[in-house]
Amino acid sequence: MTLEITVFILAILFGIVWYWRESKSNKIYRIVNKITHSKELRMKPENKKAFVHKQPFLIRLVWVALLFLISGVLVHLLTPINAFYIQYFASAIVGTLIGTYIASFFLFARDSTKKENLEKAFQKGKDFVEDLTDGDDSEDEIKEEEKAAEPEEAPKKSARDRLKDKGMIN
View: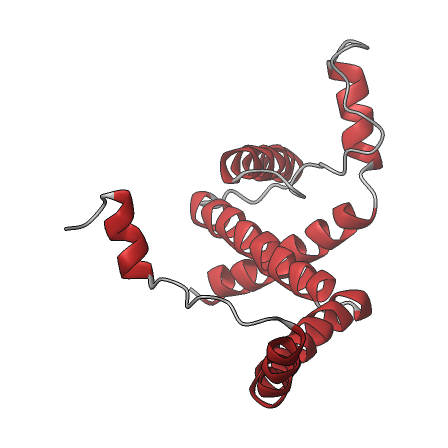
């Protein structure tokens, strides 16, 4: 049981590192894409997609399972130890997937807290507070100035009266 937990924790760390590395550069995925696809179907240069970075869950699962299947076969063939690898295989796959989602959460949080985004949010909040505070004090002054500038008009109809005129309510 202890070895399974160790494999699980190491797989989480591996998933975090793998996702972080692919968020920086997707050169290996581009090479695989170049080998497997025709020129018309290859990914565009601005595409940041990689094996686990910006991939949906099922594609991530396929790539992670394929990686651990290949490594499991290599370990089984190269080592004379005959062990029951299925439990380690499963915990490594699940741990790596969890690690990729943890890394994507932290990278997304880091991107959303960049200085420009924080300044935009601060400015929106500042404008909102100014609208709330300035609206109370200056509305009276603005209304007085408008009344002084405009000639007297007939009183406007209420919303209820306008709806009655349109025939929308009785």
